[in-house]
Image (cartoon, rainbow, N blue to C red; front, side, top):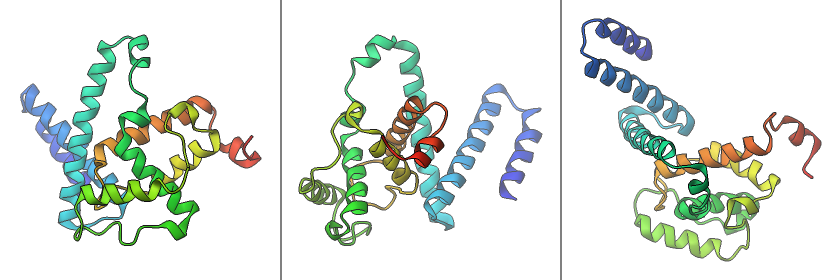
Length: 202
């Protein structure tokens, strides 16, 4: 209902607004849609949850704009010479490795890792990295991930979130890494994962 109201307001306002105002209205609508989606994905609710999701969406949109401009400016060969995504987003990759370890080694789970209080993000990150170092899992480069790992990680990331987690991985970086891994899965399986999942991994 709220989204319908927003759309009606935008349509009504577009005819009498300047170009800058129209752009701002459309951006706000996108932000609202993004925030609603984030709230449904992370199962957070209420005014505080909406504000948190809206703030994250604002950061995500800004990062995407920068990346879009960067992709336009940079030739493909230059992009390939950059740091590997898993190294570029090392703090988030450490968090993802933590998700993988939690899934496969439940006895190694860190207690109360998702509490807002008690420890700082830096302390939480250090605890996570120390715990992760005890289990030799997942490589440090994207090209070294096998198909089974890539598919499983995509699934784990889709149902997880860094919101309220004690980590230095920021939500917009987590979103970017998730997008990169999703694109890599699509590159390996351009016709979808269904057949591979049904037939098993090679």
